[in-house]
Image (tube, rainbow, N blue to C red; front, side, top):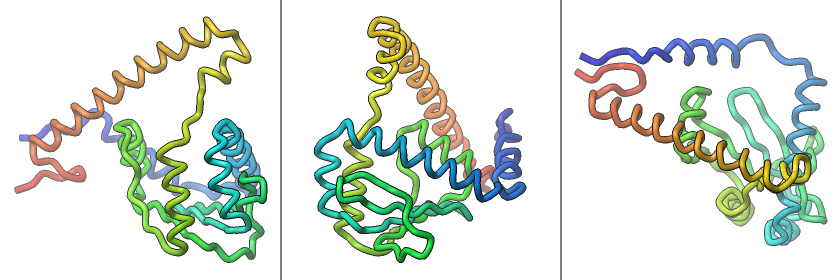
Length: 188
């Protein structure tokens, strides 16, 4: 007999939040602008990443999850900018898993989400390289604000907490697999 997770209510709650009222367009635009600024901040820390993107200047990639979309244009400097509303994407990336909880669990395990890809193969390969090889150096940014030693300590604690959370999620997934539970339903 499989037991139900005490956190199963979260999936329904997240579903209701995500499918709830539509966000105002100005808020969506601001979130997209902040996302582009963050992505560019991370890209600027990796010269090789910017060099790869320079080769793709002028290309547009559209990312979609559910009804949320964001089209990014690659600038001549090898950075990103929001694409014009009428821009035709050279590459379309659609996250196929619609469950926010499943996406969060996959991220905690270190897995990439399932994505449907359409369009330019070389642009897709370059973006995949970026995803695999470019990481935000949180500790370096934190050190600019609070100093090296405190930033190192905070980063160590955060890494340990993330590792513990990954182990918990991995153990929970293994328990589900052993008990035959798939997608919240028990197998016969």
